[in-house]
Length: 91
Image 1 (tube, helix red, strand yellow):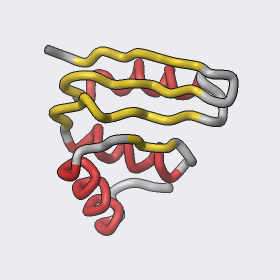
Image 2 (spheres, one colour):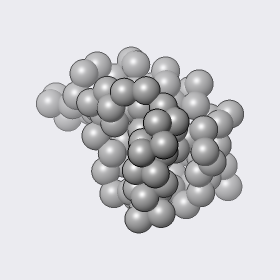
Image 3 (cartoon, one colour):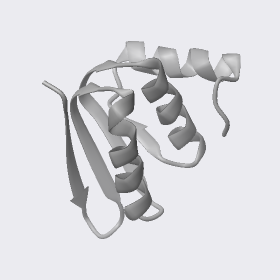
């Protein structure tokens, strides 16, 4: 399974639900979805089961720009924190 993107708007903001394996080649489409969603955006990572380092850096950058990361697995959250400490992406 690759990545499935589902987008939900409720008038207060947008939640982008990500399902499956997320790899660098998905980032262009995800960046577009985030950009088109306005200012109150959340990424729901509950059903993401695999990421690569480019995705982790992208997620950290999103978080630094005010995008909320919801339901991330401990390994993804820990990896984002490690990359932040290393300074591997800008905020």
